[in-house]
Image 1 (cartoon, rainbow, N blue to C red):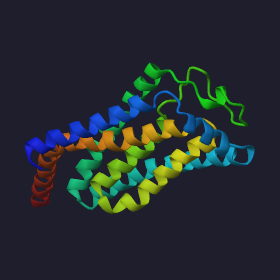
Image 2 (cartoon, one colour; image 1 turned 90 degrees about the vertical axis):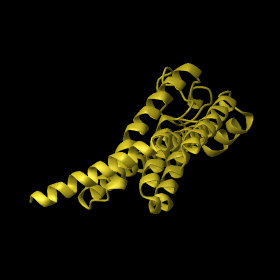
Image 3 (cartoon, helix red, strand yellow; image 1 turned 90 degrees about the horizontal axis):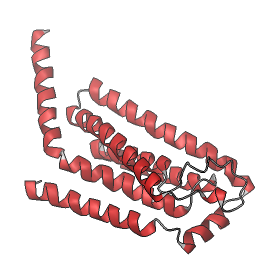
Length: 213
């Protein structure tokens, strides 16, 4: 990727993210209606359990992928996963700022649901769980593209489960999915050249170590 593309593509992606998050921050009618249709007593517990299982699966998968890439000396994947982990944390912190800034209360505080609702000051938009899930999925896919077919479906289930659990409107999840996916991708693309340099340095360090032993 040329230097121009390395900057232009991420900027365009971030502008798209900003547009989506900005447009959706006021609860759309379709989102409230879909929430009321989807949430009922029989699905709340399933949604809560599925949310926990899916997110923990992605976190564990990320850790396993990193250890595998390190032990098998897939240096490019290892460095990308390392950078991806840092970027995911940054995007998560950004999302917390956005949640406080928008101050949107959760649907379970305004619509009667069987859900066990978080405190009022634990805001809804965008969904933290979904941002993390899609961020982890994008980080894994960026480092090991073949995992895309596994990790993104898991992230989608995570997002749906947040709605079924009664904690988020669908638009909370949609905005979070865009932020988690494209925010992580755009930021990783900005630092792609630096990742390549670190990969070369890691490869050289390992080669020197082998000559010593």
